[in-house]
Image 1 (cartoon, rainbow, N blue to C red):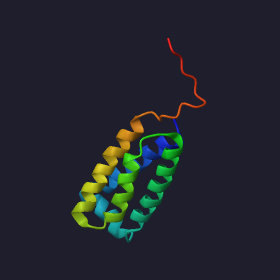
Image 2 (image 1 turned 60 degrees about the vertical axis):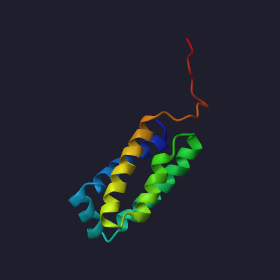
Image 3 (image 1 turned 180 degrees about the vertical axis):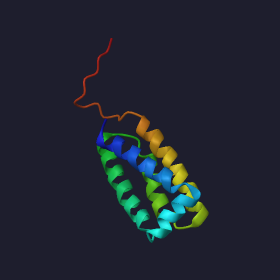
Length: 106
């Protein structure tokens, strides 16, 4: 499994936690919105690695947008949930870059 797919699973799980109504709000507000900045950096790193490995980048782009607008209470919750869904869907797909891997054609 490529590093970009691992990061998609990790960021997807973190987005899912932040999408839980009371818990996510408590984490974000309690830590003075620092988790949104950390998630922004993680999404950018994931996007760069995804582009290098040829994978789907929809979830990472949506995660970057989410990190920028998640300070709005209900919009943030919905965006975190959508980002988690798209990141996990993208993580379940194999990367398009087959260079260096062996493929058996029967």
